[in-house]
Length: 142
Image (cartoon, rainbow, N blue to C red; front, side, top):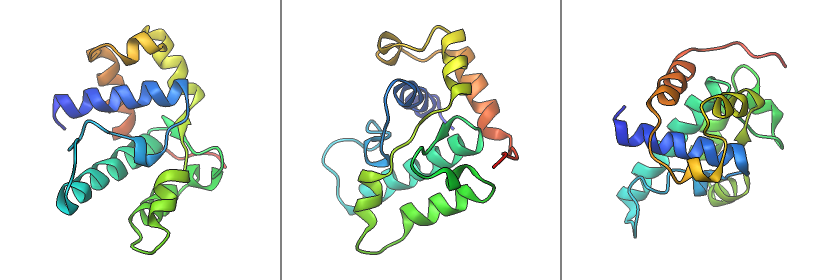
């Protein structure tokens, strides 16, 4: 993953720890601006990847869909967001996620649990921690 994308991940995780966020609002900086179908598909793929990595690492959860935090939740989330049916946009705008308690504790320990940090730059120690969390497949308790 490139450094710019990791900084965007950090920014969205800070946001999700301060307020809830939908997939449609995630990674706005990736392929930003007016988009054609190909650019939209690229951004959608990046968002799904970000959400699945964050879910795997225990960094986010979906309060209205606790089943997504169970084993197999990444696959369910991917299918939900990549399913090409008429309700696709509904999922992208109505499925909300937020940072877990573990993420909020980590952000606070790095001095990043604030809107000022959301507006700030990349924090390399936090990014290393974030990547380590996203890289480990964890078994969650139901």
